[in-house]
Length: 400
Image (cartoon, rainbow, N blue to C red):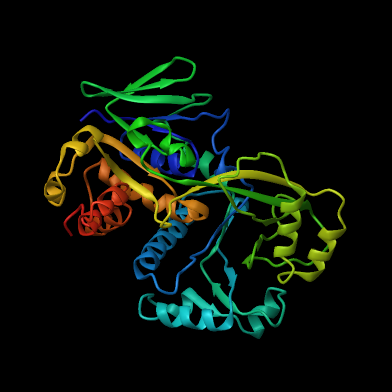
């Protein structure tokens, strides 16, 4: 097997996949449309990493837990500069009843649960300078990472080549080679291709059916103040990050399929309002500022909150197959050596490292039982199969 792959997109997804493949002997070329890596949703100054569970979705919670545990352990062992990440806790403010139900639902699923999470109590609230009426959960292993520093660290490898300002317009198969064409009329070819370009996934004919919504997010920050601030990430309606890079960072707004690139005063006001219950003094300080800095970026999200990770169908063969043929998952019409990883939404820095680790195992033909379970869950073709009443086939593309 020729171990050469082209990866489209150099955000956290593309950089993580490049890292895992380069470390298993692959010759990786990262193709980025911007002039630097990590310029899209992965270009914010901070990414909060903590598990956001649902009350009545066991499969999602299992996936969330796998991703969170993997990612935090992985980042801890990468050797990043200590100023670029910290996993000393993250708080999610929740209604009291909701927090209690979540804790009960998670009991039995998490080993050493008391080490993993705690309901907020007075000592915790006092320690982190929070409103004494707040309720929610403290995730002891949660935290934050500097996205740009992480992405740069991942691609610092002799097997990884980065080419920026390469805007792809098409992907075609010629014999056993994938041919990628750019807007500037350059061609790239390799036996293997992975599409990791977030909300632009559907721009290619082969993947245009993989619907994602682009969520516009605005974050804001102010320069360092003399306030005593919480030392960990606190998430309520918005989030407030601990002091880093001489900034106090908070956010974020979300607007679906809104492509306005400009900072909005209305969104800045929303972000300020979202931290009112986290830190009253800092909230009032922000209200008094005449100008506040910020950044706008987009995240790709699927309709069911589950990312697309895996392979896609040969559209021509798919259209010719009957329902009963498609129900036989051993005969699904997969395209050879074309992979996708997209639709991570606002949880990109929690999900993407784990999912690209699994995807790298797929590419290396070295899947574990757990990898197969994950790929069944993230099957990019689930919507097309479900639309044909093949719900069982959609979630069982691998036998476990």
